[in-house]
Length: 80
Picture: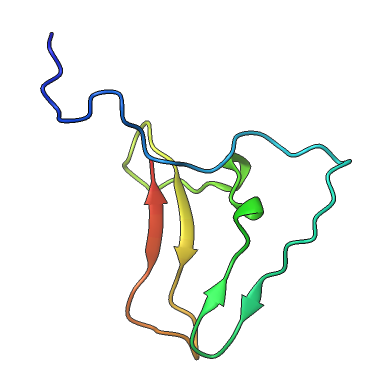
C-alpha cells in the first residue's frame, strides 16, 4: 500500500512518555488568572491521559475545560 499523504513520515509533537525520574527538579510553575491558565509542558506526560467512552486505541490530554469563572463554553484537548 502506498501512502499518498503529503508528509508520510510527519508526526505531531506529543507529550513525553513515561514517568520522569524522581531526581528531576521541577521548577516549572503553572499560572492561573481569571482569563487563562498556563500549564507547564513538563506536566503533559503520557501517564496523565484520559480515555473517552466508546473510543478505542486513543488517549487524550485535557488542555482546557469549562471552569466556573473561566471561559465556560469550550474545552480543548490533544488527542492521539
